[in-house]
Length: 174
Image 1 (cartoon, helix red, strand yellow):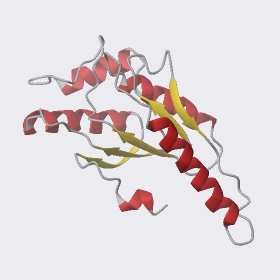
Image 2 (cartoon, rainbow, N blue to C red):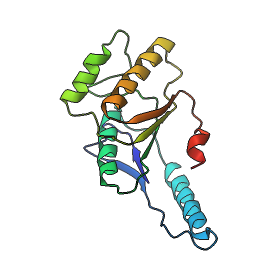
Image 3 (tube, rainbow, N blue to C red):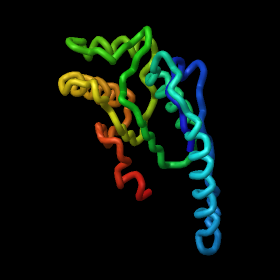
């Protein structure tokens, strides 16, 4: 498992918040797996408790390209990408914060031209918290349609794209 922070230059200056792997030896009664998960949660709570929003831009595309590279290195079969974000890509090359009247196909074309469409073949994607208080419904829907197209071009399987901030049971039950 790798947790990537989305910052102004997510690909060029990766901000890895947590990287861990649970062993395959569960122990006789699953105690090693339980202990590993407890340690992972403790470490995450410690690290996430110190996080503060500092980035002046939001490079979601760069984080997705980085995630694609990390998935390419994996040999196990399950590839799951959880994105906790309002999905407002905000950089010099693509800004989705104010999107009234933008041309979705042109934006996807721009991302392709800059090689910002990640290789997420075989990856299940869950987007959680994809809106903000200031969003209009029409802007939120346009942004959602952009990301649906993006993940289709990335060959990913977008399972959930939700404005809700709670992690779905389909994920927590794994």
